[in-house]
Image (cartoon, rainbow over all chains, first blue to last red; front, top):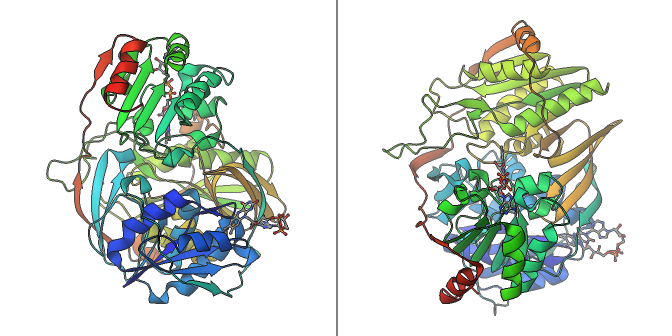
Length: 308
Length: 252
Ligand SMILES: Cc1cc2nc3c(=O)[nH]c(=O)nc-3n(C[C@H](O)[C@H](O)[C@H](O)COP(=O)(O)OP(=O)(O)OC[C@H]3O[C@@H](n4cnc5c(N)ncnc54)[C@H](O)[C@@H]3O)c2cc1C
Ligand SMILES: Cc1cc2nc3c(=O)[nH]c(=O)nc-3n(C[C@H](O)[C@H](O)[C@H](O)COP(=O)(O)OP(=O)(O)OC[C@H]3O[C@@H](n4cnc5c(N)ncnc54)[C@H](O)[C@@H]3O)c2cc1C
């Protein structure tokens, strides 16, 4: 029994939080082989080899695997699938794009957002925006799944697994990468940050979002947003937390001007401490908040920022 | 070009989900059901392509229980031309897995020969986020998932995708499967006259067996449980109190 784990690589760098947590999620299932795909991924492959529990790293350095385009990367994984009982990856947008394609090519089901590995065939996953947890047992010969990394601890470093270069050339022609619009930021990454400060529609404008960012910077936090804030253009799409955005579980989550719709709660209710600042004392967000402050955010946020 | 839009009937997104006491699933009897919100966006996008002269015909298809007919009528009222209902289950609690749905859709594609399939990125009940990708795989087509902008340009679709880092633009050769995200458009409401007209639009009824697809599940549901509930917290009276509480619990 061995597991093929597709590594998340961003601009040639290993997404250490996502990969190390997925390694520990699958550790009980057998030998773990990590696949790094994409030209320029040498350093990412070397870094993956340091993770405890990894027995081998496969590095496919063909240019055609860059940007994790679904068609060539899925074909690559299928070509390697022979020796594996499980194929997995952290539930990133790349993995959600690629792994269902892999599963269908192998004629097996996909399991998305696994939060617990019970045994080789049995997994837990949230459904209905996290309002129910389902335990499912797969009868497929190969299990293909994505992992909700907030449910797992990171694997330690200090390993030196061998890295094996694959000469596989990417099949091309179906889709072509044109551009990425990615805002560079010095803030911690949203899904792995220890503190997240999120703003909602109550923030009112893109300019006022600076209040949220100011508080976040004071706390060394990542910035998040509700869908309403993103739809209204106050915040970029990659800040969205929720059922259709990112799932976060920081030590501290501060929700400002967010009502607490179930779709938003789906992305943050496993945070350790939740703080809500909202002027409506009936807002549902207070039902999940450890500390609720009924106040106008335009008074409370500047005051809080200055007192930290 | 013909556009095929798969639409799923799901629990309405405003309904509070209740897990059945015996742990066999979620209670769906007598709750409000609607079209999956992502699929409304896919239907809307298809209609806009037709209005822009880039598509000639919009065919909507739903796979599930016979009540999915209502969902198809909604899509027809929005502006789709024709519908196909594939009955694959009798009990409203039976969810057909994405792999089986994709297999049926692949057969529909073989028959209908669309140039584009527009589907939702995920269904809000099972949250699998898989059907479009699986369909593209079975057809050997290109895929562009999580679309927030779609431009059809000759033999290709230029698609802006919402990804973890921000936005990514790719160009996918047609025919392709595009899965849509929430910010692609705002779906229209069906007007009353259009709801009336939709009743006369053609709706073909098929079964999974007509397509020779085995819909037996690959995943057995062992149990369905309530998530852990959070302990209700406290309200603080001032920013100062908030700061001292956060220090007390070591959060800052
Ligand atoms: C899995 C993986 C994903 C990566 N994703 C990105 C990414 O999203 N954005 C990014 O800037 N770098 C990415 N990189 C890093 C990338 O491979 C190169 O290290 C980097 O682009 C160097 O580019 P260059 O223009 O300096 O040099 P060169 O490598 O000589 O590039 C020359 C040209 O080739 C094209 N090119 C090179 N690398 C890539 C690539 N990965 N994808 C598409 N076109 C490329 C570009 O048009 C570039 O201008 C990724 C690396 C890996 C391993
Ligand atoms: C299929 C689907 C998927 C979805 N996915 C997501 C998702 O991933 N993430 C997500 O967040 N949402 C998602 N939503 C949307 C969700 O249902 C809500 O509409 C959204 O979360 C509301 O955002 P909000 O709380 O910012 O806005 P609102 O609900 O409008 O709440 C604004 C809050 O701000 C407060 N407020 C206003 N002014 C002030 C002030 N001056 N000071 C203090 N408080 C103030 C108000 O009291 C109110 O509680 C989804 C919806 C659907 C249908």
